[in-house]
Length: 134
Image (cartoon, rainbow, N blue to C red; front, side):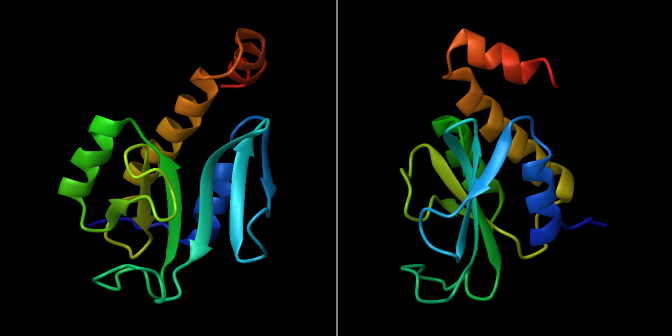
């Protein structure tokens, strides 16, 4: 049995990461999560007007997460609810459609990877101030 995760649980998990804040640079409909000043996730409701050929996003919350380019492709092959990052660099971002088809633990793992990828590009001083909390 797959234990699914909803948008409130995703938001709570994202905000539980050290030094994470929420802001709205793209309007009230798109929640942007950043560690210090660097974005590592977005969360929004798919409206159905996206250039999503299968209309998979309509009516579902979607989270954009940074991803290693090779892993990004593998995740898209494994999960139908993982598509190239909507409005993002398609090589380095995936959109995960929260339709209940991906286990909660897998989504949390993807969030962890996105967070750590962004932290790994920061200065050593910033990295240490974040990693001390993990």
